[in-house]
Length: 250
Image (cartoon, rainbow, N blue to C red; front, side, top):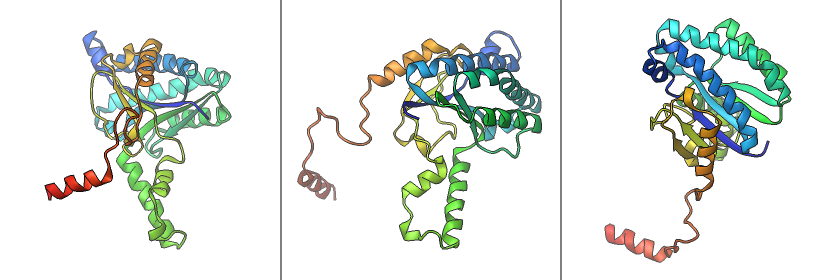
């Protein structure tokens, strides 16, 4: 599946609700409309993979009533959006733990995963009960078991094997967007974001829509991605000069 991979940390639902003197769950409900708007807009804007941070493993620390409403919204989203996702060629999958998701929400999620499995227009990935550190730990254990079984030599282990174990072969995001003005990663895709461009949006998630996504992508496309290399207008420093400088410091 070609095209851009955009990841979004959907932040600010609670602040949106509080600023309007509404309960926090109303902010989460309004955020579902933003999910719908962004999913509809993404393919037209050249996005082919969209990863949304829906529920972090740390979110279990929130009040049980809020957590319950979040999973109720997940179940309702899957039920209400199923036909549209299918009609528009959107494949929905989830990353993260599944063993703690309430049974009714998990059934709804897996039903949509199954029915949309053939979608090729957009790969919509929901990060649910997700922790990047936990994902890296799980991948490390998987590789350790392969070494223990004699399927993989330690000296043959490279970052490619670890990358595949963590990501399942999904390309890293080209762009990460975080809403509500916060400037941190919050344990989201820490391995994958090594060379991802970052964009911080002041609007809260319930305020975020197609126009905000368009603006973020326009900003992204004006950037020069170097992946650690020098830019075309920069003069390359000779290796001898680097060695000289290192020697002087020593």
